[in-house]
Length: 175
View (cartoon, rainbow, N blue to C red):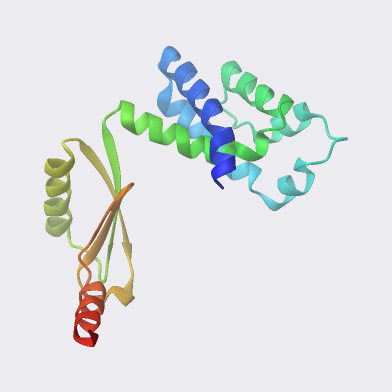
């Protein structure tokens, strides 16, 4: 995985620079996301490494309907360098670069039960204050947390779940 990220990083940076120059960060992000999903499709995976298949033929499958010439050229470069399998990593790194440039933190709040709008708004405001940036929040439900929530914001994980608190208490009592 780390090797794939290392190989994908320069392509993600190049795509980001190109998209920023053109003022098309959201469009490029969407097109990269489409291509990343397409390259993970089992039928595409089965022909991806086939040396008899021309890169141009595969690129036509990976292009979204609204793709522009610069995105097509980007895929051509990836195809020529046999880097099309890296599209999921490139897409992820591109989105990280975009979020940094737009000063947005993406956070996932996993709770034991569905959060109501007031709780979600309060958590979002707290995260904005903590990070000093805009926060894009997605939610998930995990019954095994018992209560509380786990907030995953990239490199930072805040675990306020009852499951973790009980595990710590159990470990403390065992010692």
